[in-house]
Image (cartoon, rainbow, N blue to C red; front, side, top):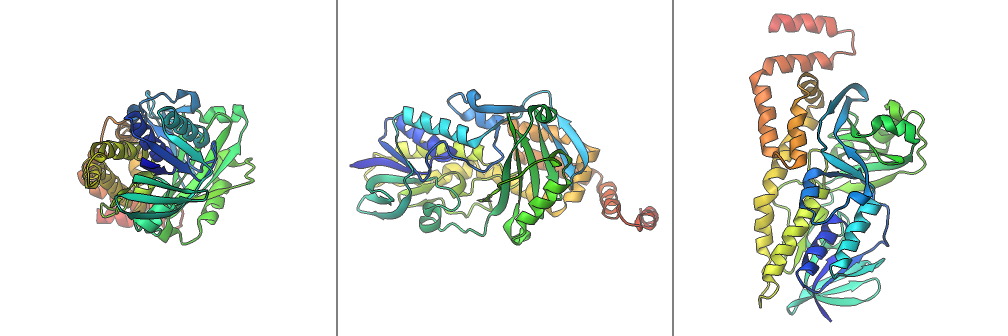
Length: 406
């Protein structure tokens, strides 16, 4: 049997693409190496802008509605920045991903769980797919099997070095203790090189994790995680029995290859992860939708050309990811200065919340940050330098020298 499309991987990107294609009447087969529901390490915050583009309701799997965050710097100096409107929803990925997978099945996708794609060969107007349990043919293959999957590695030349590394634990927690965290995230800067740590409340547990750029962390992610858990007060009585590690393929530039012949990549395989705060669910869903649109328009052609998918991604998603990369590079290079800005202008984060809601853009938010720095560069730099010496006996002398200099 020749399928129109085979999808490798049933996370948000793969399930969305399968749902959209099957809804258009195409014959779709989708594989995932795991059987659902399966645990997926992830903070699990679904933004409002992701909710806006999903064609179905997922309220049944929401664990908590998020209105803002408590930010800290090395587990100190907390700033609570809350909004009167939601910015997102915390979910457990096992339930959320299973819901998306079932929506794809209901739309007409043939689903095979617990079956891994192990071989891909292009030629003769179709693609030969070999799995752990059989062989299949399709006109087009969608790679949605994650950062370490065969599609990205063997077909699209995925560079595993262009990743952040992360560790997370799901901690059962008393409902009364969780209540104080409801409606807000906890995000800590300065605890790991070029990254951050988080605590996301769920219905009966906390998702606790840390992530940093691989080349900066240098194999020490477990140590940074242990240090964060030890310092963070809300985790003082937490019992962490098991941790999960994974790689986060952040967006690192528009040169990432996302199409090769009749194979295209969505979600993590296409490096569609926000390089500022690591949000990937929105970009996974949207890239799956864009892939489905291009495929449905090209599937009947004698010679299937998927290059318009490159164009669609470059037009809609790359500008935002590029702006997020600029913010991430600046924030994680100068986390202390970034935190000083948050302390002096917490209302600035409402602009970022609008980005998460889909009511503003990363380009606009980046321009706002730059304008704040340009408006008073000496004041910010002085406060940053003072902060660098805040825990030493030199602070008094430094302050005096700064007064003389400024």
